Image (cartoon, rainbow, N blue to C red; front, side, top):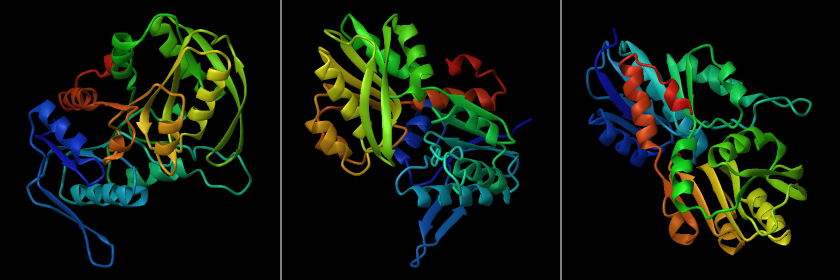
Length: 313
């Protein structure tokens, strides 16, 4: 049987780690995660973890490569300290968009990430809303893939107007949008998007009627906000009444904040899988919901060897 539950975290999302700690009533375990003067990461676990059931909470967000290296080094430190089981809790899984060879001579970096995490010492992975579900198969260890949908749905049901239509900003998100629409008892529309290059998108056509409707744009992440803003513009031009955007991961890099603030979007709803570090103060349209109870409950059930099936919905 697994030993004592212990929570560890790097520096990528300490606020979420603390919320999970509060939910479970378990303090964050003591570990030093700093850098040497030359930029190398230094990790020292400051308590006994032998035989423990350990959970490392670390989003692979900005600065992405530093966050990933922190995660890998923490995993290695815990593995070498004779832990019974180590679970990598990764609210936002970095490099997930590089999940296939869509061009000649390019890597499958999501698979490389899976190999690194496993080699570093993780026995299982707990994550939220992977960009592509098949990434679970890149791991040779158990993966619990949760969805932030219950958190987002609860907010939308309390706040939405009638006559809502859920819009997928591209064909790849149709399954996600359809599941969301079914639970809202709402209609579905799809945007035909042609991507001209990385972080560049052009909306071509909307498949569905958004005229006079309250549009809810749904995606797993918003990065530079080019897609969501162009989609919102297209919906507005096609007669949409109000337009919201809902996503799990608010990457919000580059000009994203400025684009959202200047757009026709009424509100952008996201979770705290990625810390915004003051960005919400620059944009009044962003609302953040917490996935700490969802992750905390999953951690509790994994530790107690209970089913987490009900959390997948």
